[in-house]
Image 1 (cartoon, rainbow, N blue to C red):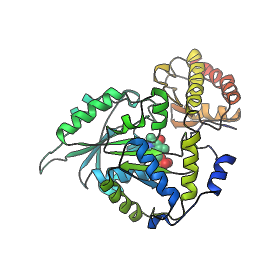
Image 2: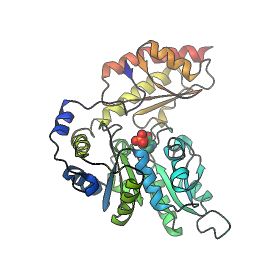
Image 3: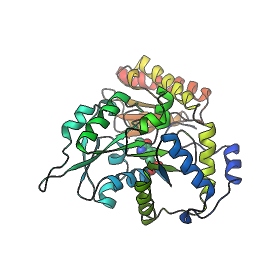
Image 4: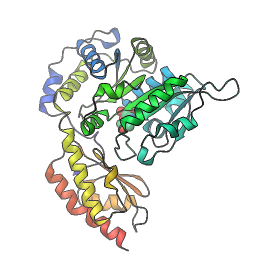
Length: 347
Ligand SMILES: *Cc1c(COP(=O)(O)O)cnc(C)c1O
């Protein structure tokens, strides 16, 4: 099977497994795991933050970030298709008593003035106060779009002026960096808390991290334990992540090229399905509105041909490239998918 459902489906290769086997470990709840401690220092330095706390998932690192920025009953703003409000099962409300309001961005793309037009800081005793804004980069359901750095900087300035904090859901910040050449530091500078994932394109089996100031990370560490995610000899996971950081960032460019090849083949026969202007990284979202087939139908036809994709809704199909694919897999996909789209859009 050619698995294009997600960039989370990659498996550790032999070299990563060797790094796992060789890792020095200790009890991380006692801050005794040298590999985890070194990884937290390494990644905080990479993003220019004072400290980091290792988490099993990106949902948890997002939740720890917003937990430290927004008090119960206060408000977080985010884009309407952001992972934080669409794919974390209401965790902000369920765990932290946080309320959310959303704006809608074209393919998830940030426009700072639009966001600020709905922000309501310091709303007094009768209305909800906006205390933080979360930005997703790249934007998953937006089709892997890269947020424009100028809009990010503008949002930072405008929020700073009125005392609103900012959180970056940087699950795929690696992809944004590779696509633009903008440094991790330059992105992270604009946010009070930053969440990054190692289990997507980087190919580690598990792991995310929340990055921020020493104080905020100390607070997040307490909440991590309270939520039940204090972990013990997890240096074996940190070692896999070290391996991924050492070896797996540059080849994200191949994932991007391959996603573009798939998108271009689809757009050439079904221009309504995908606009190449929005294919920035490793995700291709196909919109099937106006075709004679639903996303689950095309998905099952693909499956019959040995290709797995994700139906995100009745008319939306997502394909994600990753490091466990080959150029042959892409050629095979392009010998099947465009023909299916062509017939779906013909009638
Ligand atoms: C994958 C992802 C996360 C974290 O997901 P987990 O499955 O909890 O690790 C967060 N944000 C975005 C945008 C993601 O794609």
